Length: 305
Image (cartoon, rainbow, N blue to C red):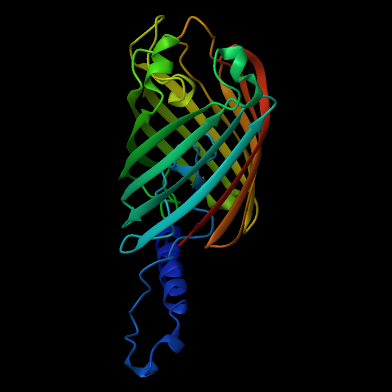
């Protein structure tokens, strides 16, 4: 008797799970449902679509992963909406947006960030509570591998993406030395999911000119060229709907008036259902616009399918 490989078992198991999920009560006549009919959404395993990172793409809190947002598989549609709030001693950042995944191949996302200077605005020559607003449009394409199904291969899931960013406060970011208030980040992510070990590993290479994710513009008096930056994540599945992990992200240092440092976090994500996930993290951001040693709590909620 031939022993089936784990990839085949996984495919069969996911197909059976998808068929079992079809709500017969939704049909006037259950006998008209074809045995091979599958739902249009929701075929992925819980938490394998990641959460919404701070720029709107599917991934961790700080960095995109190669996964496609939502729970759609190869012939399904997926999507989500998120709201994120990060508060440090002196600043606050809120982000909200939506992302859609098509056939587990293409992801489109849009997010809006608001960076609140709170009471330190006057120290920066700005009014108290001054806010920087930034819009981010993202495109991600899975180019190789499958994080869930390729358990019998060391090949990770690989995706390439771009994030176009536009900062509305062009005059101000240019006054502090930024070359432009708009810029585009290019990245490649590789994500390996080890189901037997309950472990996810991700590495991202980003080419960027962004100052503080773009909130202080792009390029500067020190450098106006693209810099390769490294981003990494590791997550451990504590139970079927609870995971914990850590991330690290390097950033360029383009502006003379304020040094920029790398950032990292430790997070916990809980998904009671495929329609809701909650993420909490402790984040270290380093110095931001001359205000030193910024760190705080990150909270994010995501709803989707």
